[in-house]
Every structure is written in structure tokens, then in C-alpha cells.
Image 1 (cartoon, one colour):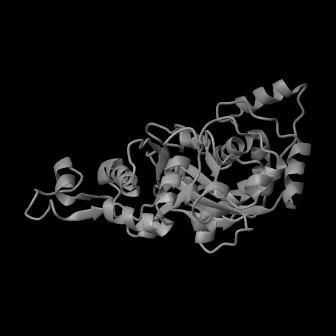
Image 2: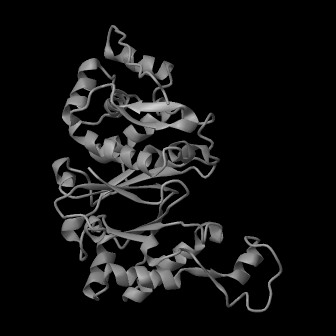
Image 3: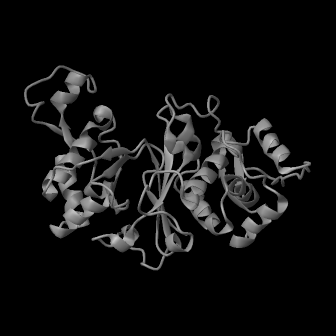
Length: 345
């Protein structure tokens, strides 16, 4: 454990542009300009949550680094967060620390180019005007973008997860800028996701997972719940050609508005959909052997033996979000690290 927490030093610059360039020089950015973390801005962030600067939020032993409230606040400022967003940043980091602090290192050390997903539920979505509908995964919404960016800046500036150094992603991923959105609870045919886990409707939560790139599913042809679900099951079975099947992987299905309307009208519950996808998303052992994903020659019975994409229907997380402009959904595969941890904000 680190015995003494070192406080940040204060350096003065003639103007804000000089301060921004200094942040570039020190490698404190994600490639885009950052807001200079002045003492006043950092203190306002800390005041919003009532934390002392030296409060230790967690430690990553494999990196011999700790995260203090002051460091988290400074990176939130640099990302462009308002103080009202900071509780979401802290809850996300708490979920990462409480599941396994060393997974924070793994998130960037792996070559699969994983990012961090944060799904927000409860009243705080409206309080901070978090986007839950149109252009859900796009730029343009300050809370969504800056909360995700704050997480990445913490990983870069506190835990040295810099591209080409500790960040060993082979192809990289846009998810590393952050994937943060709220569930569209108000327009969903199902109960809010967090209440399905036992939380109260008036509680605000984050659900945090390490993920690979989302895949858009534009099913415009299905007129039944089964036809839509079959296309999602096919996407699950195709992703990664089955490399990760049976390894505790979870999936997040972000159901778009028109898809959710169809499913809700036909009486599909969240549990119905989980069980259907669990049964339908598989590849045969024979297929995987022919692809070289499993060792050995194809033998009698291999084409009939199924390898399921998930261990349980509970491993398929279903949330409603997105706009009304098309018949689209997003499918996201979890990756090793954090499977899906829900934390109260």
C-alpha cells in the first residue's frame, strides 16, 4: 500500500491556451484539448460530493498506484464535466474498484482494445440531462461524452494506460472515449433495468462493464418477436466466431424504440427474451472445429452438439434506449475484466 498520498502541485501560466499546451506537453490529454484543471474548478468538483482532496478512492496494486478524490476531480474537470456529473464518474470508478481493482489495468493491457460501458438508471438521468434517446452513441451530448472521457483520462493520467505503453490494444476502439448513456425508462414497455435487479425506482445506479465494439442490428424485415430475436441471437453467435463462448461472457442488448414497441405490443417480457436468446444463440462444435476455433477433427455428433454463447439467461442484459428514427438496436459483447456490476450513485 502507498503510505503517503501526494497532493497536486500548482503551476501558473500566462493564459489558458498556454495551460492547454502544457497539458499536451505533459501527455495529460486523450488527443483532444482539455479544460485546465485550476484549483477553483477542482475544488468545486470536490465540494459537489463532499470529499476531501486526499481521500483515497482505490488502489491498483499491480500498478502500485492509488486514485485520490483530487485526481479524479482534476480529470473530470479536464474532460469538461460539470460538478453535477461527478457522482456518476465516482460510482463508475467504485464499481471497477470493488469488482477487482487490477481489472483497471487489464482493461487497457489486453490486445482486444476494450472500453468501459456505463449504463445509468434512475432520477439522475434527468437531473444531469443525460441522453437516453436520439443519437445515443454519438457526440453532441455533454454529460454522456464528458463522463466517459473523464474515465479514460483517469486511466491515462493516474494509471499510465497510454497507447503503445500499457495500452496494448491491437486495433484500438472508439469505445475508449467512453460509452455512457441512460436507459429510456419513460418509453420502455418493461420495468427499468435497475429495478429488475432489485433496486428501487427512485434510486440512481450505474451498471459498468468492460466491452468490445458495439454492433448495430438494423432488422427492418421482422414482423414478429421471434424474427427479431432470431437476428439478435445470430449476431451473438457470430461475434468472435465463438472464441469466447463458455467463458462467463455477458451481452448487453440495447433495444431501439421501434424494436421495443414491436416486442412490447406482442407481449414479450424481459425474461421471455433472455430465455429465448439463451436457447437460440449457439454454434455447433462441428462448425467451430471447421473454423479452427476448437481442436480436433469433426466427429460423429459434433454438428448436433451445441456450444451456447452464455452460461445463463441472466447473462443477457436488456435495456431500452435510442431514438425513433429507425428500426435499429445495438448489441454489445462484454469482455474479460468487469462482467456487469451495478452500483448505487
